[in-house]
Length: 404
Length: 183
Image (cartoon, rainbow over all chains, first blue to last red; front, side, top):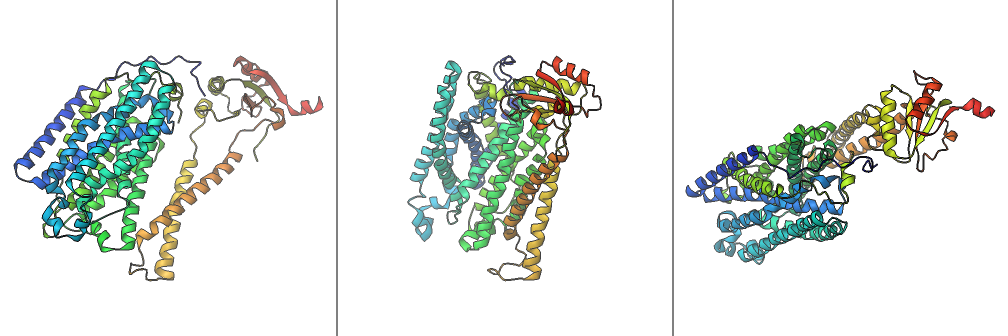
């Protein structure tokens, strides 16, 4: 199926460039986010500020670690259709170092976010005392820090191997990447669980869900593929990778977005149904909280934003092949991820009589935009630093001929 | 049954890319009743042959909706009207417990129905094929065989043969089963 021996390679593109408007928007987002967080911190709204910080930093962190996970998945599954868009996930991993540091700063706000971090509360609470060997600041810092460090190390190894292939070519680097990927996916399964347990699940330390880590994984995949789709769609629209990236590649990418959208609904419903079926007070508290204090509309909008709208609109073939439609729907999914994080974090703030009431997530959205802006700046910096396409990957010809 | 045609032109190519290029030329020359017999599916062949998008996805959509209706109807009828029972104090119309069956019925109806419709449609909605015993050119091994059927509206034996030769096909020959039987 190869026309490679009939046709010459398309002219190799130079390095990618990021339009000034994107950088301008990103800087504006950073300023908005910084201003909102600054107002909340200065105004003494510590809980609001830290919950917004957590939502924003986790949103961006998920995009960063998805870059590494997706590289690993594609190397292992030999997803050769994605060779020409490999620079996108590679550049996403650049966030892991600065983003990891920023995420670790959540520990500074632990007293506002996590009631298990208050010694007096733990002393009076049998369950929290029981969980104290796991839920304490030392373990929080050590385990989350180690997980983020592993992500940084494996990203550096994966992108480093890709750089080596850019210089030397050959199949050796591809084999090394596959071995690294196999190890990383096991590491990733454990570390994403640890990070999601500490940062999000422990917000409500009495509650537990066996579906939680896989739900966060699903979020990361859905949001990450959507981000890649936005970038790839814009690259196709801008004509920067003419001959290397076309609607067939977008189609496969769109299928990934579509599949992860379906998978999200499956996992979120599983979590809901298991809790609904067993009907145990210690489990139903999660949805009881999100049904009271004005949170119900926020909870009900979530499946619409995250599943119904993207699913129905991504169903037609052309929605995955036309860059404009794919980009628009991917942006909806990115917003939906913010919404889900708000529904995860917001209602978990405060307990009993002090439980948080629902409010329009203005500061939260601003903070998320701020982190997204920072993420985009780092991403853009990393994206333009290397050749636009891995020209020496042996699988390149197969990717150029890809037909979907 | 797949229709066959006793008359037509056969020719073969050795490379899938050549077959793809030839298909586009046959399409552009205005031939309608032609087909490629290839050892494996060639990506892009549908476009090169000028085939329209399949209507099977619409069948899948309708069957999926039917599956949803069926599962919802059955469960609501049985659990609410026909034989209501108390499960853990939950309401009779407990929608979360209906979702898995609804999902599975949707997939089952859509997948099985689409497969059956595709098989049946493949039998009736196709152009007349060459007599099977005459395709000795390795269409199941390493040859990409072009067939233009004499049922084509613009059929002209000499013109068709010359055209297929002009495409660079190998082993071009006119097929006429009656003559072959006589020979």
